[in-house]
Length: 79
Length: 224
Image (cartoon, rainbow over all chains, first blue to last red; front, top):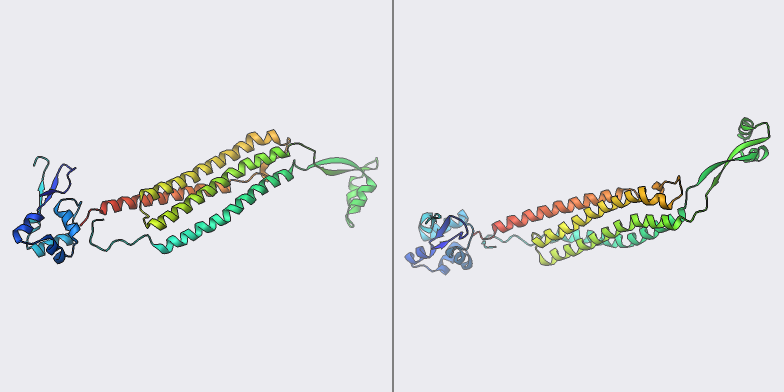
């Protein structure tokens, strides 16, 4: 789990690594299937991106057969 | 940029190349023009001297009659002919004065700083365009800084030029020119300063556009 915006009061956490592990898929394979570079997927997995396009999210959900909520979660200031 | 969409292309080379050509042409024209204008300003001021003054002088009626063209002589002479046989006339005189070097200095003081600032702005703009062309990075803080510097310099130069002209018109000119002369025929008008004001504001406006573009690009960075 990685905070997307560590400086802000609220945080969006990315659970890409957990979903990948649950499906036994590697980041490289996902990269080929969603046509997003490994570098960018790695940045997304580690929470080093500021935003994600709906189109990217749709492709991730299609390939990983999951919902956006499986990939992302919100954690408030106290969480 | 963290993005898998097609990267926004480099700075469009076509218009940048055209702009480079325009700046280079401006420089090529400005350097000799500046030198020429400087020389001319000094030469004109040195040759202009004090103004011509019309002075009434008594002229013999016969001499006045000879000076009047055919067809006009009789009426002109008879109208002004007086009982003493002497009529009125005038002669253009230019009093000798040692003020010419002072006039040249005043004119140069007004002209040369503005030309020098214009040349500096062109050189800075040339370097800026070259750097943008080589870096292929228009929307950067360095571009904004360079444009603001050029714009500020143009505005400062324009304001300085106006102030210098005002000072020369009101304070310096009476010190070096004879009484009654007016600097309007010798000193430059404010057209150059007005153009510099427009250029300065335009450069600052472009700098603001580039700044906002750079900010938008920074916001886009980090998007997957």
